[in-house]
Length: 252
Ligand code: PGA
Image (cartoon, rainbow, N blue to C red; front, top):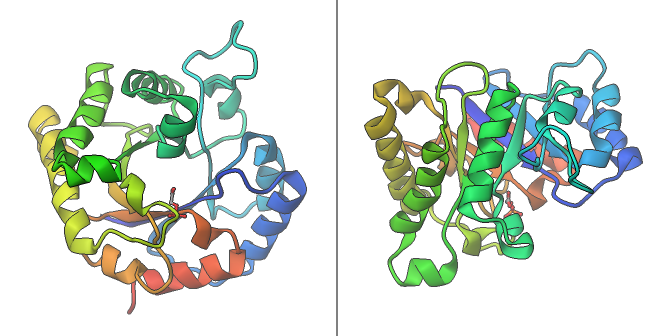
């Protein structure tokens, strides 16, 4: 399977800086055999799209969506609006949204399915907290998060087929990366749960890892079985450093 690298700027870069990031990143020499994407704040999608011009890389994505396409939902942005930016993907269920905005498994599931109905590929984030890991609940938590999206009607085929991002909450932005081997156990459990539900085509659903990935450890993740890509927060904020990370991902 082709590997995937997705940058998540989180709450960084309004339109001016987003445009500058994209233009700088377009000057980077990039590996051709990896799918590279960037998840941009809503307000910067138009600037990022126009700075991309005809360039096909990076793929453009959003960081969240609402589950309805329109209506009386003040402040929200729905999949039909996002579609106007020709997005390749949209994150849902990032742990920071679960933690600071109270998003539940059910809300995340509704968002993922709404994206699929609009033809946008959901990148569904799952992962346990440090307390849950200490109690030995990692697989139980991750399976429950996944089960909620499956119950809501997840489809695994077509252009809006999902990507699952395993992001242990304790490893995000902390420098305490989960080792490739520790992550592999969870990735394997996710692949197994998907295959059990959907059959063996589900082994083609990418399961990517996120949490303190940087240019030094990226190759370790991408060479580990069951890890199909990476989601990068802080190490994506500088376009040149992110270019270095992309080149370090799959050493020749
Ligand atoms: P980090 O964030 O790379 O800064 O740990 C990853 C993420 O939250 O997607």
